[in-house]
Length: 421
Image 1 (cartoon, rainbow, N blue to C red):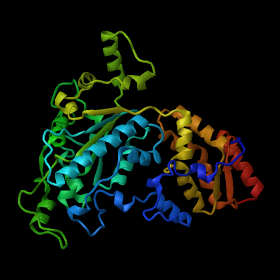
Image 2: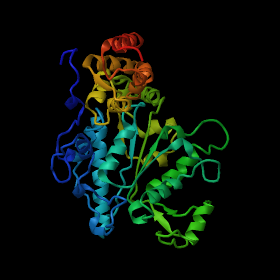
Image 3: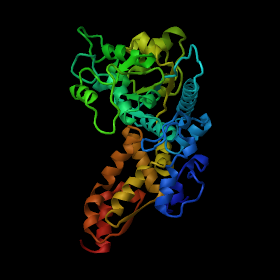
Image 4: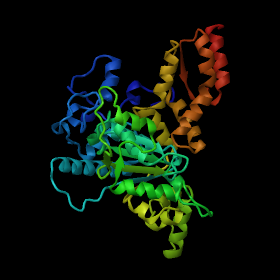
């Protein structure tokens, strides 16, 4: 593709053209809107749990037929790179829900160890996007939270047990579905214990409460501190089943996935490797993260019991300039679509040239915030265009390398050519 060519719509479309990208009936949609809906529709036969608006809730509806490669193919449509993380997540999810299927069928699974997952990696590499895309594919209840909002029970702040209760709310009160959901905790590195004196109510205290949930715990469906919930339990609203006194939800089959940037961990790993083997792997901090061991996390500030509940660990890799170009060009959740919709609301068509996208990717890579840097650069470059063009007679423009290099000058020339506002 030459630098003067526009990036074709097909180049911005799905990464995967496989069966997971097809509509449930396999009929090609005819309109742009139907094509967009079809790409994001999960075939009914691939859904493990019914959607919240489904009327069927019998156990016969609970099934899971996906294979790890099929899950990864779905993730490839939305997240660029991170192949190792995709493989780890795909296998962990498939193993977990095959186990759930066995237990729901009444089969015994003695000595089963839950494959809770720890994702390491810098900001903006797709950790959250991976989990959200996987949860949408499987169709299970999914809760995402920031670990920094929690404190030890009895102190100001959130209670980690509220995560489990959020799963119940996501299922409309169906405890049996909530018991097989996914809880995703971001910023988990922020609850590492501190060396300072005093009670660490937002670090080790939270770890202690979380490790109980991640293993096997019974959580009260209604929090004893939730006065409104207690009232609703006594006097349920119409359409909701009454709660029995002391009703609980078990966390044995809830999959926990946590993630964090873990700034400072590479230094701990480097020191350990230098003192033991004298050899430090190449690849910078990304290569060091791949070498992380339990002892490193303990030194970082995690309790041995807590990190032991996270047996599956994988490091996400930083995104290079080429990767950021592909994020815009290939991902179905590309930021470019958001800008197209924003300008289209005013009747303005925006076209993207390959040279312009490469210049944006280069500037975003310099930001050092992964894919989030794309929004930073695009907002800076297109800020005046979004302000001026809706009040002008301009109905289309192209994002070129010249525009990215000199947004104000390009805008002035564009307005001059198309007449005054």
